[in-house]
Length: 217
Image (cartoon, rainbow, N blue to C red):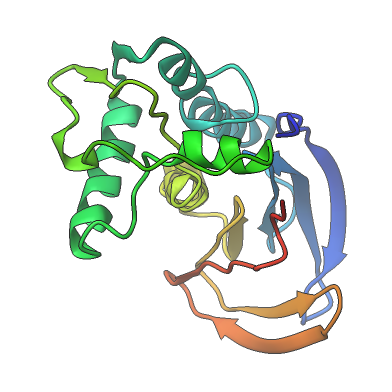
């Protein structure tokens, strides 16, 4: 799988519906396009530093596209879990149990086998049985991926930063989008079908999308 670059910030500007200029930062997080849109204009350097530090923290733990706690865990089969890794594990476990096991983070080895043109081997262990008492021990031959929830977790963590509370309308999009303090009009487009629809994302609400053409073998 192609390694993606870590988030690189470029300052830009775009017009809001009222004609005012909004500051925008763009880059990539965990292989997905990312942006933070501030309707009230540019943020201070201190605020930007806080945003980037939180994004970097998530990348250093959960990314499959760089050296991270997750890639080291997959390589070594065991490791001491950080608080953020525990948060991701707990969230994944709740979804795993709510879906009767259909959502299973223990499929990274199967993704790699598919990418190499191989028939994927079955998942041999239950995600719910992985030890999480300060350390994680993976079953032999199994690897973890949090791509089913890591971008949403990154969006929620960035959106929860106190630095954004008084910034007016903010759209945080780390691959999944969340609106703060104002409504945002979003469109869903497809490379072949064009614009599929639009919606208004109300303050405090979030949205996630997925495309069947995003990853092909």
